[in-house]
Length: 236
Length: 236
Image (cartoon, rainbow over all chains, first blue to last red; front, side, top):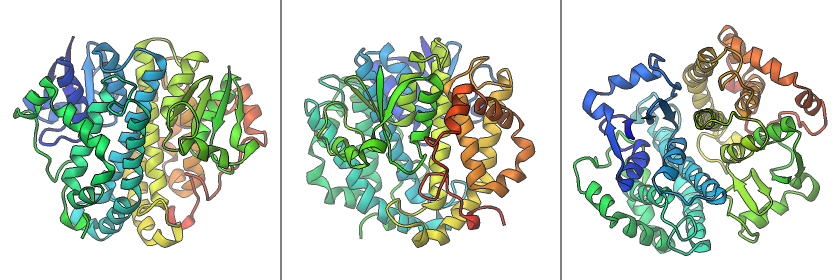
C-alpha cells in the first residue's frame, strides 16, 4: 500500500504524529502537498474528491479510503504496521492515550490562540499570556504527571504494556514540542519527566526514526505550527 | 455485559454522548456516580483501581476493561450493539466524525472558559465574550456547514451511508446543546441546519431514545455542563 498524506507544508503540526508513524513503520508514502502545494488539499476540503469529507488536515488516502483526524488515522495505520498490540484492550488503550495527547496539543494551540483561530497571535497576546500562565501552572503539570503515571503503571518504558506502539512515538513528539514551546517551564518540571525523557531518547534512537529526524523531511519547529516558542508565554 | 458508566452527576456533559449510545442500544448499564457519588471516580483517577488510568471522566468499565475518552468508548461500544456498520471504512468514518464533533464540543466549552478551566466563568467573562463572538461568527457556521455536507453526501438522512449509527445520536446531542447554549445564533443559522434538524427529530423519535429523553435520567442542560446558556455569549 502506497499512502498519500495530506498536510500543510512548512509546519510539523498535527500531521507530524502521522508522519512519525509512517516513518517508523518504514511505510511507503507521499507527502502530497510538499510535491503539489497546499492547494491540492482544498479539493478534498471542498468536497471535489471521492471518499469521506475531511474537516481539516491531516488526512490520509489509503486506496479508496480517505481518513481524517489524527487519532483516527493512527488507529487505522497501527495494526497494519505493528505499531500497536493486537488485543482489543491494547488498541483501546492506545486510542485513549492518543486522544489525551490530542487534547493536550489542542490546549497548547490555544495558549497562542485563546480567542480566535483565524486571528493573528499579535491580536490576542494579552489573553494568550493569561491562558499560557494557566496552562503552564495547572494543565501542563497535570498532563505530564498523567503520562508519567501511565508509563509507571506499565513496564516503565512503554505506554502500552511492554510493547512499542504509536503512542510512544506521539509521546516523543509531544515532549519535543513542549520543550520547544516552553523551555523554561519544562526545565522547571524536569525531575517530573524522567520516564518521558527516557522514552523519548529511545524513540529518537530507533534506526528509521533517527534517519527521519536527521533528514530534511523533518521540518524544524516554527511559529506557524501548533508548538510555538513565544518567550512571553513561557516562564518569566 | 453489564456496563458501568462513570461520569459527573448533575450534568449531561461529555458523558451524555455515551449515555445516548447505551440507551439507544438498550444496553444494561449502571450510572455509577449517580448511585455512589462523584467520589467513586477519584479512586480511578487516583490510580487505585485496576485497568487503564483515565485522565478524566467519562469512562466505562466493561468487564476487566476500563475505557476513557468519549470517542474511544463509543468506538468500542458501537460494533457490539449495532451502532455502526461493520466495514472498516464505516468504522473509520464514524470515528472521524465523532472526533470532529468532539473538537466542536471542546470549542463550545472554551467559549465560557477561554482562559482557564479551573477558574470561574465570572473571572473570564470579558475574554469569553470575545471567544464566543469568534465562535458564533466563524467556527459555528463552519462546523454546521461541514456536518450538513456530510449528510448531503450520504443519503441525506444518516451520517454513515444509509445506516443508523452512534454518530447520528451524537449529532442529535450536538444540535440540542447548541440550541440550548446559543438559541439566537442557531435561529439565525436555521435555514442552514435543515438536514441536521430533520435527523435530530428522527433520533428523538426512536422508541428507546424517546423513553430516555422523557425520563428523569435525562438531566436538563444547565450552567455547570459543557453547553451553557449565558445570554451575553449568544447573539445580541
